[in-house]
Image 1 (cartoon, rainbow, N blue to C red):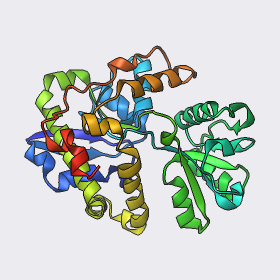
Image 2: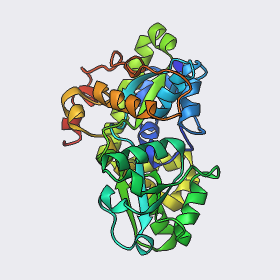
Image 3: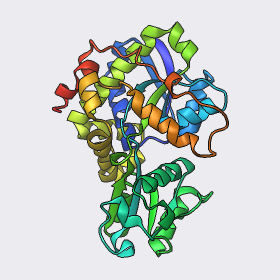
Length: 321
């Protein structure tokens, strides 16, 4: 049995439920792999841990992968888990004054982002909508999304930027109607990826392929049975039971909104689309976020995706898409 560390991007939550279900159902064990989950501190940290070879695998946003590459490291995305970014603009109906459904409605508004990378994506969203100059897009507050949420709750900003379900969480906690504008529905940019170290992958190709086969099976199983996926998540962290409804919404959003595109239908689960990486690289290169040059074509590979495995090559049919 090969033991590997899987560095998560954050604490266990609904977005990560498929990995826990894959382990609970023995999918990793069938590949002769023992997965040890490691709680995270954000996507950049996770991507760096994999790039430095400290962890065999990591879950990290695509923008973080390119950011780490700009610092001189070589992270390798071996699967594109969610084909759309989870970033979203969210607001409260009684603050915004109407239901938020289109980017154009943000004209003349004040928007507070929770992180630098989501701020960049929001700026691109506003630029594409032709309203960038009319929106006051605030700098990132060092106290992250909690301070942003407070600003929205008190009405000192019109909208905030975080990830899908942030608005729903506020609605659930404060009994105020919330609306969300998923940025991934407007920008063809990647969300979460599975990352490894290129040397590890080259030296252990069957371990990487096995890890991806088992993970894909976990995503298919979770998509078809979300309740069991959340059961597996709660088994890892019992405190999540009190927020089970929200965690279920998080996973269903990931499965129904972020996971699937026409590219996945044609090429299979986890397959990278060169155009999405190129667009993301162009977006990041227009900012001062990167430490050095990047080459989006070198940070990903489809080499380790076993399309003969139904959960990868035939995932669309297995999840009824």
